[in-house]
Length: 175
Image (cartoon, rainbow, N blue to C red):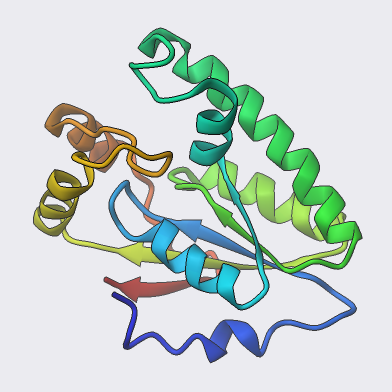
C-alpha cells in the first residue's frame, strides 16, 4: 500500500536524545493503521484508541452498546495520553494511530509532545472518497479492533467534519 513512500523521511528523524512521535492523520480507511504498523516493525511503539477500546470493552455495538462509544473513547485517549508522555520520557519512538481529524486536537498533541521532550511529525494520508468507500466495504467484513464498522452515513459525517491539515508541518501521502 505504501510501496512508493520513502520511510527514510521518518527514520532519519529518530535519535536517542529527542524521541520522535509520528501522528497519523486521515479519515477512516485511509491506511493509518497499516502505515503505523510499518513503523511499529521498525521499533516504534504504536498507540491505538481502537485497540485500547477493544482490549478493555470489546467490539463496538456487539460487546457494548453504541451509546457508550464516546465515553470509552475519552477513557482510552486519556490512558494513551498518559502512556505517550511516559514513552517520551523513556526516550521511545512512538506512532499515534488516531485520526487526528481536527486541528485543535492536532495542536494539543503537538504541544504535549514538545512539552514532554519529544518532537513530532504529522503524516496526513490523503485518500479520495470513492477509494475510502471501496476499502471500507472490505474492512467492514472483518472482526478485529481495527475494523470499526463504518456506514455510508458515518463516512459522510467523517468526510464533512474532517479538517485537512494545511501549513501544519504535515507530510502528505497520497494513498
